[in-house]
Amino acid sequence: MPPHCDSLDGPVVTAARKALEGRDVAQILPYVPEEGEREVREAFRLAAKARTFGREAQEVADRWFFETVVRVHRSGEGAPFTGLKPAGLDVGPVIPVAEHALDVGSPDELTEALCGIIREQVEERHGRAIALKKHAAEGMAAARAFVEAGLGVQVWAHHVYKQAIAAPHAPALHS
Image 1 (cartoon, rainbow, N blue to C red):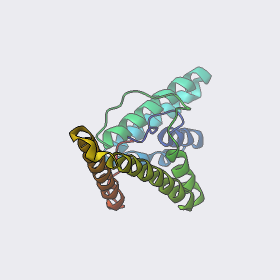
Image 2: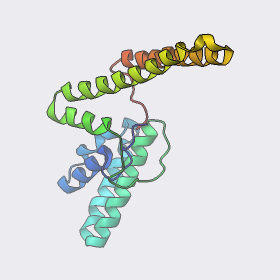
Image 3: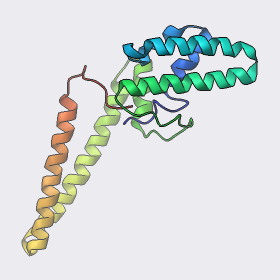
């Protein structure tokens, strides 16, 4: 699961915040499935009304609206809602680069990052297998260690390949 659609600084809450601030429910609707749109529209209406009753009411309404849209978003992915996560979680190196690529309209930085990660993994996994291969004739345990590492490289490469060639319009993995 990409790690931050359910965080307070993730894309779903960011869109929900913009919707409330701009008084435009359409800002959040792309993040929820069609079957959840009615619920989100009603939650938006209620939250917008509650926000007019002062700062504390606004904070409660906003939080409730964020929880609602994240829950509906996660439901559309077939994933459970386990609560809002705090802002600032470590989402790893790739999510920020992917977000930036979408912001600037160029895949170059993301391509470089992913190719670099793949290159490092190939070199590490292959290097380990080759190091074990040098000792494979030293007994059954050494031979098995080499075979395990070699097959591990092949299986890992196959999984990476299958993910890489997956249809670009295929449903996203859980967020």
